[in-house]
Amino acid sequence: MKKIFIHFFVFSFIFLSCKFNNYETIEKNKRFRDDINTGNFIELNDGYTYYEIKNEDSIPTLVFVHGFSVPSYIWDTTFNSSVKLGFKSIKIDLYGRGFSSNPDTNYTDELFANQVLELLNKLNINNASFLGLSNGGRVISKIAYLKPEIVDKLIYVSSNSFMEYESVAEKSVSGKEINKFITNNYPIISKSQLKDFKNPEKFNYWADNYEDLLKYKGFAKALISTRKNHVNQDKENIFINNSKISYYTIWGDSDSVVVYNNFKEKLNKLMTKRNEFFISNSGHLPHMENIDEFENILFDRILKD
Image (cartoon, rainbow, N blue to C red):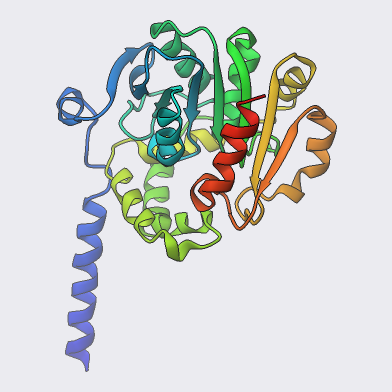
């Protein structure tokens, strides 16, 4: 019995060691970028940005901004539909996510907003509608605040930009914090992504896809820094509400990640001009769980206004 326990302990140690050795091993350098055979890279002020653009000669333009950790592929289904419908369609990996660089800086809403705005400037795009998923809602609010003249419509999907946040005094991220985050979270973080769905059994592949993100150097730091730099966006949201910008909110009816009732009262006070929609039988990612209903609202109602 003692030998069995020792063998089990040794096997477990080796397994976990191998698993941890696969975390954050890939440097997103020139060689890495050269090996990516999809999309485009462009060097911006804070690093290289990966993006995809389709129907370049079309108008109007839709810009898809992803959420907290999963990069632009989270928008694939809606993005592909927008392409088929003839929209100029752009999706982007924000800094610290996917194929884009991991700059050594604070990951703030302004950093991401300026990344998107700089890309659009390089592409000579001066007007677009923006879709912000979850934390991407914070980014599109900041875009509208910094450069309202570029915004046609703002479309918030399961957005956390209306929640209350306690400001963190120390914004920097230490090596100790990074190591602790990797040790405590990386072994379980991929499967935890399934909580985004009301019906996770339909998306078993989602956790496997997330495992690939854990291989990129700087991912943990980007996540920690982003969370540390979350602040209330009341100023931005009041500005939007008082502007001439049309804006819309879309929610999954069973979202357990961004819980609507927790900030409904605040939302009703700040964003009085919003047009609001709820997608049935869906959690935090309604554009993936109930595609038909979501796209009917997006393309046949919001974008036809």
